[in-house]
Length: 67
Image 1 (tube, rainbow, N blue to C red):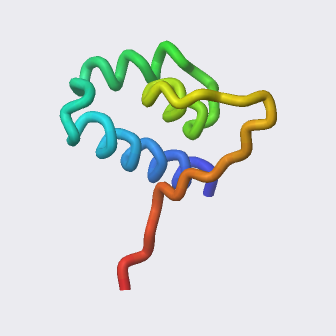
Image 2 (image 1 turned 90 degrees about the vertical axis):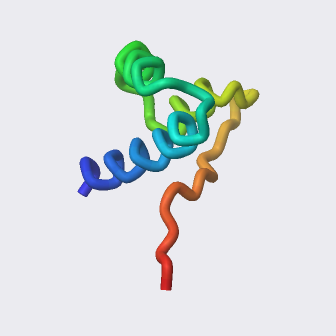
């Protein structure tokens, strides 16, 4: 289950950064490998240059169900 959720997060992150033209595929891939074992939401915060506070709480809604 964790692999599926992580995969969905990376698909959404790629769509946000690569499909929008903010990064190339190579930049995205290299960044993911460099940041290694961080949770995906923290990788997203770093790549989008979001300020992080010491009491950071997750809030990213990476998946929505279309009805």
